[in-house]
Amino acid sequence: MNKKELIDALSPGTDPAPFFALADKVRRDNVGDGVHVRGLIEFSNTCRRNCRYCGIRAGNPKVRRYRLTKEEILACARTAVSLNYRTVVMQSGEDPAWSPRDVIPVLEAVKKETGLAITLSIGEHSREEYKALRAAGADRFLLRFETSDRELFKALKPDSDYDRRFACLAWLKEAGFQVGSGVMAGLPGQTLESLADDILLFKKLDLDMVGIGPFIPNPDTPLAGSAGGTLDLGLRMVALTRIVTVNTHIPATTAMGTLHPQGRQRALQCGANVLMPNISPVEHRVDYSLYPGKICVSDAADKCAGCVDAMLKSLGRTRAEGYGHSLKNAPKG
Image 1 (cartoon, rainbow, N blue to C red):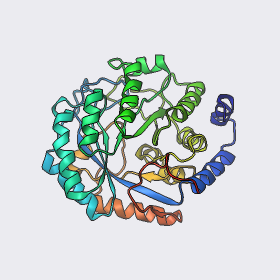
Image 2 (tube, rainbow, N blue to C red):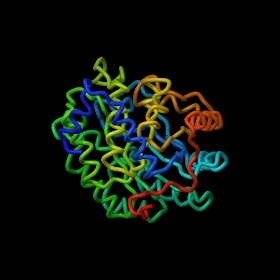
Image 3 (cartoon, one colour):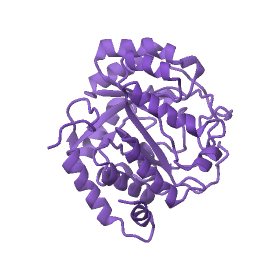
């Protein structure tokens, strides 16, 4: 699809049903019916950045900050094993106390004890630090660019640099990571043109994973009171991303489920093939509030696993086998 076709498909006046059906077929033909389940470990909500949309931004004094210990992270990884998850996603703010040097012993311990695939989502670091993290056992790295619009990026992320963000994505690929990125849909000042550019950039970057979540305004941020993104727009972005990128791993994000009780199910029906249930300690989940109303913050990890399996059964889907590594270099057929 070219940019004009994408803009037309994203427009509210266009019936999305044909794109949703096509995306579901592309997903089935190229990724299969299995859904990869990744256990999410939110190990620190301390962040040095002041992104204007984010609830754990450095300038938000209302956040009760926490950091998990190495042993607590290992305990989460053991929970993942007990629930038959094959991947953990270790996510945090850009916490100076959890530098790559500090993360490396944890990676090594998790890998040695559990053999799980490990995805990191810990922000911007140097080329050499990314290489060290990869050597320590991290398999994948998520670094969302949030928007391809340079001016909008600057407005939303005042203490970040657009070019540096994309340099980091290049360094991650150079280090041998399976690389994931993504955007928010429905940001203040965002246009359908820029969303179309986002999708085309996913293709150009040849990403292994793409995460798309609707923007949900947090009342404790500078964007409080802004209009949020809609489930419809988020689903259109998921479907069109599947059509354009073909075999990229795409999660049905928690933000989708926060906007609508069937949000994640609907995403799985129009292109998504990944779920990321939270396996962090329950007592800290409410403190990792990027946006308000986040679902599943009080549910024990085993309950979340049961909900995931029930959701998949209702859709005629099953958990995928294996670690869910990138399909970008997999043989066709």
